[in-house]
Amino acid sequence: MKKLLILLLISIALGVEAQVAPIYNPKADAQVEIDAAVKQASVEGKHVFLQIGGNWCVWCRRYHQFTAEDPEISEYIADNFVVVKVNYSKENKNEEVLEKLGYPQRFGFPVFVVLDSKGNRIHIQNSGYLEADGGYDKDKVLGFYKQWSPAALDPKSYEK
Image (cartoon, rainbow, N blue to C red):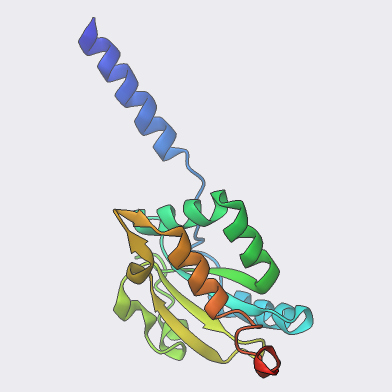
């Protein structure tokens, strides 16, 4: 009976894992999505945040969940960035886009790229620097977003 119960629990757990909605769309045209995000960022006075990874990547899924579930972080992102999730998988590596971005995949996945409201790359972030104790660190993640927000790069923020 115990073996049956354990098998049932394992089956349920695997079924739940398989039903998790994909974060990255391998069929998406990343360049079209980035161009649209740049236009939106220009209108809204935001930067563009590119989250590059794949549904196969456990750390990509963890990062997505971590930022989505923290109200302070998710609100800060929404207020300051237009987000595009750029797929990298065997189905679609988006190699031309990544070449234009300076090969951010060299840092592993997920990797983050910040563009200004004109589409200029202003930063590539190795996500490993945002981790602590086997997961993502709230202070490091929020600090990263604050350091690359439009206000942080606006000279007016530093006038006396």
